[in-house]
Structures are given as structure tokens and as C-alpha cells.
Image (cartoon, rainbow, N blue to C red; front, side, top):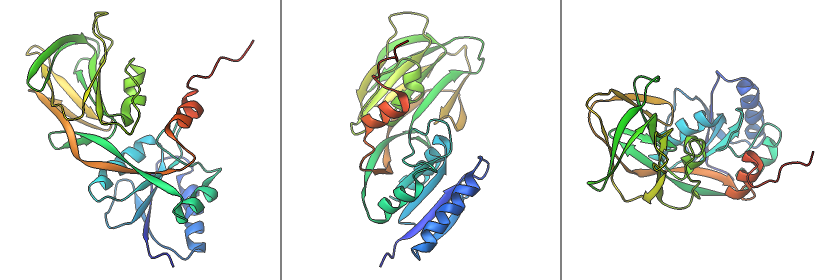
Length: 265
């Protein structure tokens, strides 16, 4: 008998979220399982497993919250790309059956911390004035590295390396390594290249006195930066439940068309 407690977390502001939630309820009801319904803005702890219905933003928010409780989360995609999700409406029944049969793995993904904020994907530092470039200084473990004149800086985890970091020309990192990617956004010199450092390093961003800055965590939580920003590996890890046939490289191929030759004309 399955005595686990489940939660269905959904984003009711997204199209089809109620429909998918009702379908998932039917599946769990047919198995006589104990579950609770949670809105993404009203998350609660105390669950052995959490189904998350929504796009990557919904999954990121749930992953950050449940990281401190160790609850695995499983993403069901309603968005466009759904890079962090493992199932869609079309294969929902089969995917849930796999979960209920424990035919999945849990990957513990590294997160970052800056002050009281955490990020599973990235921290992005930008100047307040979007029409102007800003000056940033980078230090690692207390040692000055370089100065950037750029639109911003992305400090990302391996999970976040396929998000904004990749779009800005940063490296793609396998999710099972502990490393941090640092990529300038539109730097005003060709010599300003992305770098990868150890997850044990302390990264410090020092803004110029002549600029004001904002920092975003996973593109969702935004706060002002008036002095130096220190970023370290977070003490908690996100627990992502993954189907065994959805490995990282197949996701790269299927969702980003990675390494696929262009079709012949």
C-alpha cells in the first residue's frame, strides 16, 4: 500500500492548468492516494512528493521552496519550452504511473545564495537604466579578476547554464557537476569571455559608484544592489524527480535541437 503524501502544485494563471490538474486528480483518485492541492503562491511543506503543473518559472519557484524540505518535485509542462519539466499533457498518465512505481531518479541540483535569496538557475546583475551599459568589477575568493563594461552579468548554476547564460554565449554545463558559470551580457570588448569556476568559490560583484543596479533571482525575485554582492553555493539543493528515459543529453536534443543537422532544402 502506498502511504506517501503527495501534493499537486499548479499555476492557475496559466492556460489549461485547471484541466491538467483535474486529470492528475483523477489518476491519483483511481489509486486511492492521499494528496493536497496547492496554488504556486501558497506552497506548504510536509509532502513526500510534489507534482508541479506549469512552465519553467513555476517549477523554479517550487524547487526553491521545497529544497529546504528535501521533497522531490516533478514538472508537468504547460509552457513553451519546459526544459525543467518531465511530462506533458499527452504523456501524463504514463509518466505518473512511472512515478507511482518508483521508476524515476532524483537529481540533487546545486543552487546559489546571495544574501537571503536563492537561485536554481541564476543571479543576473544589471544597471537600472536599460538604455545604458554599466561597469562591473569581478572578484573571486577575494582576488580581483577583471572589470566588465556590459549590459549585465549572469552567474549561473549548471541547471541554469541552458537558460539566460546560454543565450548570452555562456557554456553549457552538465547538471551533475558542481561549478558556476559567469557570463557578461553584451560586453563592450571581445576579450571579455565567459568563465567557469569551482562551486566552492566565493564570487563578488562590485558595482561602480556612478551606477545603480538591480539583481534578479531566477528572473522572478528582483532586489536593488547598493554595495557589493557576494554569491556562494547554497546550503540546500533542489530535488528534481526525473524519468529514467529523459537524460540530460536527450533533453538537449529534443528541446533545443542540439547538434542536429539542418534539414536539406
